[in-house]
Amino acid sequence: MHEKYKFFFTWFLFLILVLGQSYGYEKPDAFIVKIYDEKVRVLSPAKYDPKLSVIIENKTLVIMKGKLETSSGQVLKFISVAPGKSVSVGVKKVKAEKVYFIPLSPPLQKVELKIGNKPYEIPPKQKS
Image 1: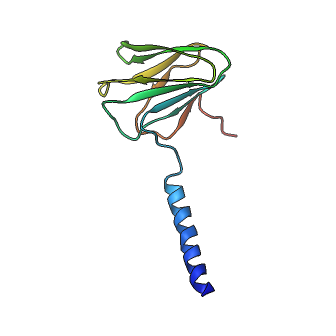
Image 2 (image 1 turned 45 degrees about the vertical axis):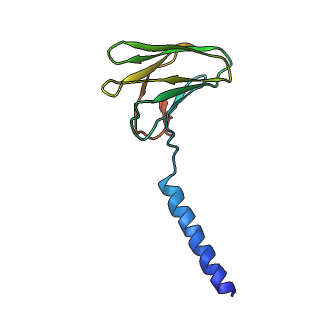
């Protein structure tokens, strides 16, 4: 009887390990842009959706101001987020253009929102 449980337990652990490695990173349905004091972390959706939204999370201690802009320079939205809060913004019909989040205050590097990427940071993590 114990041999039967041991067999199922072993297979259960095997499945968890295999599935855990294949889905090892987050894939949200919207862009999630987390603003920190010295970096910006982006989680991107797996595929394009015409009702795509961008969630901006302010992890700093100051009010964050920024804008969403296309590669052609069209401003989609100006954003202001209180410390520790988040804001969701809908982005429509931008499949043909690149979309950027540009932090204005505090000033950080311009961030391209790339669909289908693994989570990434701007500036990138330093490998030691």
